[in-house]
Length: 560
Image (tube, rainbow, N blue to C red; front, side, top):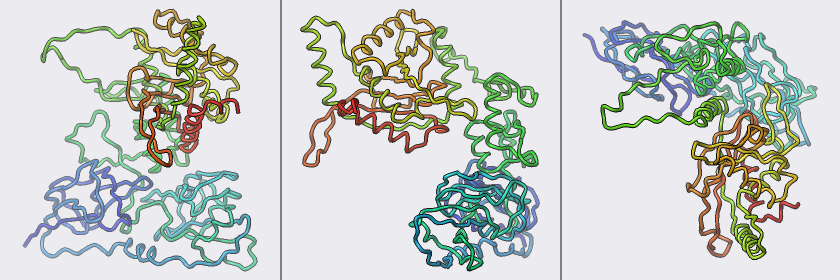
């Protein structure tokens, strides 16, 4: 007597949803116990989910891209007679181990302490290969930052740090084999942070306090024995049809989960990337180099564009642009793009694809500054002075002060080097009938606000007349794009490569602001700072924008 059995996602050691990245069976397939059904992936690990029963697949309940968790139904199978359930998941034991807190040991508080970070519980795996070392001596690392990548026959996993501190010694190298308890590195930490769960040092005379990571430390989702996949599957190739979505794809790229995620964010097919790591493993630098070569117009690996796709600079391929006869739906008119839009469009596309943008939005109180600006302009009218102060002039001057305080914003990436500039040339986006152009105020740090206001007006007039020279649009360090005269609350400006940041300014509005006693009307200016996350972290971006807001709120600070 046959019966339908629902196969569900077992305990995977996490309550979070994970992505279904591969479906390994089709309806009608005959499967055995422990046959892999689907592959799921978190940010740091991929794993295959096995069958708990043998039988014939009657219906598949998930598809590529779905998110699942423990208890989600994967498929229904028809089992003939009595079927034998799969062995209890090893993850249950792992969870019990995790539930029991690691023994604590009092650690004397000193100014700093050196601890040994070791390989935590990684299940039943022994002598696991170290395929990547993600830190080096002298690095300052955060808690939970990945230290090394390990690989077994069926899984890749990144091992995170249990503490924040400075790396004093790295005890492993690529190609080493490690097991639970193997030393990874020695870390100097502040005394206050040394009370994390720990095990006793192996010897009383050891000069450093040895602290092991908690049992749940590895950044890999717990799963039943033997279910972890070595890599995520190949995503649908540009030529694959949706009808092929459930066909198993076993020619997997040799890369860690974090590298695969990085490649997906950039739209890179890892099957086109040649790995430079151990055993041909693909590293983050390999992905970056692939994108650089593709956008520079070079071919990578000598591969020709795949049929049915459009090749954008070598092997950086996307689906072809849809061809639609718009006149079938109504009257149309065709206008060619202006030369400026053709040039800027290509640059903007490159910058958006190549630069990992992050935008920080903030508000600056410009109530007093706007009153001062109007006052100066009124005085100028009475004295016959034509110079008209604009808010852009104040923004340029404030940007120079902020660049001096945060020099990493006044820089450009050159391969693995950061070029820090000692000059301050500020570009500003000028709206023209043919599109946006970016004139540059040279040596803005050496010019007064009235001089800057006059020069921006002259350059904007040249831009509208199409008379800007190439020299007047070169050498910028930082760009300001202002939509204040048009509207909007905030936006994401695209970084003007090779710069590493750009400031977007929207229309100021009168808003009620709490002063500690009551709400008062204040003129607030929205600031949208986009920055290159390869160079600038989130905290620096927020500090830069906040400092800029402080200068605009009280411009006397510019002289400090």
